[in-house]
Image (cartoon, rainbow, N blue to C red; front, side):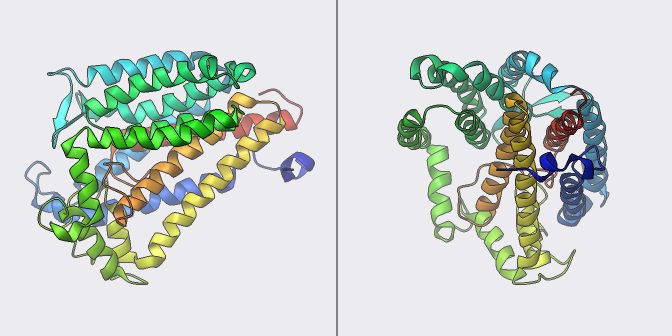
Length: 387
């Protein structure tokens, strides 16, 4: 497929993808407004928030500011550096996942041990691991490109490593992050040109593996059963989903109005994090949900276009990183949207760039900055300069 910017470089005036930048700005801005709306009642009633209605708003604004600064720093790093140190970043992610499981180091919330206390904030290693998985999988695909048709040399080492990551994530437990990282690895190897026949076996084998993982834990089995019929136990395992569906139903086409949600008034748990989309649906209606989906579709389109552009410039690693980040953010968004609408079991995944959460917002901003850096390098090369 031809890219217009390749055939007409003289018409390019910007050094960055302005469309992608505005899409991300739109998601962050909408998220900030909706986090405030979804959390105001909880913040006013909470002792640990000092009964401040703007508690989560201020914290989310700080997270976004930190994310933008971290993204600005990440933008200064050439793609070659990310590739050189990708295995070390991945190893760091594994170490952090190990540390979070150590009693006294990892912080447990609602039965899950996913956070490392860092004095003034809590770090969630699984969020960093998603970015590190993209960087590592892209580097791995480039290094193994010539043996991509060999199962033993190309696939087994990668999936042994991902199996270790999966074991650590399931020990937290964080099945949602494991699913996203599997999607990242598979998509990156697929886009990297690995053999189709082997992927056929994986397409058959992976669902069986996921079923085995689900059946191995009573907790995960009940989550799946509860998602299938939340009305069977609306005050127990189906409580969260049933209230999310009520929020969707109340919103209808255009919503009940910004700030007028009833479900956020202590009925819908995690309204400002995992179930933010349900509040968007209730207050802004189908129109608001459609805007969110269109923004993520635009992010996918622009990020994949940047990746295709890198391919045409013989920059395979950069292309795989850009497209891997697109897969990560959009698959996670798809899972979150599916969970909120009752199409998928509850996974504990945030809506990227929208939901409340320091680690998620900061890492998402860094990932977007890496994509913008790849785009900037593409444009420099098309102008006859150096990346």
